[in-house]
Image (cartoon, rainbow, N blue to C red; front, side, top):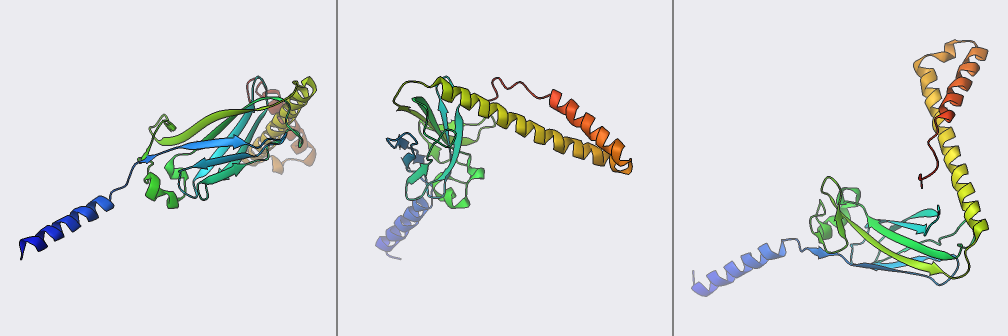
Length: 215
C-alpha cells in the first residue's frame, strides 16, 4: 500500500477518534428582569436545549420566596411574571438564583453536551452536591424602586403562615388516615372512629414545626 494512502488512513482514524470525544462545556448564564412591578426573568445561556432550570426569587430581609420552573430553548429561557399576592412586587431588592439540577435529573437530549453524568460541565457556575454530582448555579439580583411596604410584608408573612398551616393540616389528615388503616379503626363504631380520628389530628397539629425559619 502506498505510503501516502497509509498516512491518509491514519489521519482519518485520528480525526474520527478526536471527533468522537466529548468537548467540555464551559457554562455561562446571565439574566435580566423586565422593568415593571411584576417582572419576568429573561435568561440566556449556552446550556443545551431541554435543560431544566429552577429559578428562585427571594426578597432581602423578608419571608418572600417564589419558585419558577423553566427550560432552555434556543439558548434562552424565561420565568415569571413574578408577583406577590397576585399583584405587583413590594419595593426592595430581590435575589435571583438559577440552578440546573444534576444530569440524571435532566433529559437524555442534553447528554451530548453535558455528559451522562454532567462530567463535561466546567466553569465558575458549576458546583458539586455532597455526593459529588455536578450542577449549575447562578446568582444575581434586581431592584423594585420605591419605599418599602410594611403592609405588604405583613401580608406576605400572613400568607406564608396560612399556607404552612394548611400544608401541615393536610399532612396530619393523611397521617391519621394511614394510622386508621393500620389499626383498623374502621371496624369500630362510627362514633369511636370519629373520636379517634379527632384525637389523632389534634395531637398531630400540636406538633407542627415552628414557622420561624421555614422559608
